[in-house]
Amino acid sequence: MENKDWEKIEHFTPGEWGRDPARAAFPLVSAVDRLRDTAEVPVIIHVCWDDSGHAAKSKHNTGEAADLHFGRGAAGPLPVMEQFALICALPFGGIGFYPEWAPCPGWHVDIRLGNRVMWVRRNNRYEYGPKVLARALAEVLHEG
Image 1 (cartoon, rainbow, N blue to C red):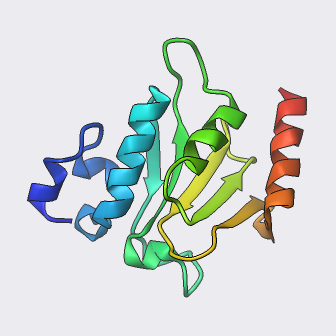
Image 2: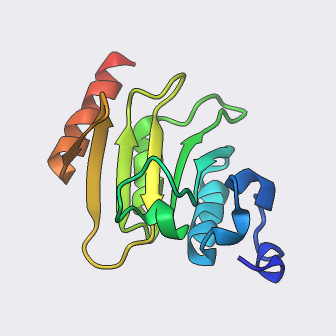
């Protein structure tokens, strides 16, 4: 992303986007900025562009993916189903759920084109499909 693009971003600074914020794709940063605005709670980015630790075709390799979690707002944590609904309302083509992140679940969002892909990562194992994600969300709700 160029410096002039960062001027259009309301809730984030380049330093919040990892090792090389210039490699973050503007459409991704813009969508996560809208997510933050809609959620009305902090959104913490763990990684965006990265050249290690991801699959060869990962959108992290092109700066088109972010792993993140929602912070606490004034009213407390945002319920996980609300997090999911807010993510689904935006143009994210890939949505991954990481229920094992502590102290709160994490998410992968990316701006891939085509059909939306959803998954859950547990114990470094990936399971794909909306039903798998729905079951994982239900488990988190049941535990909470």
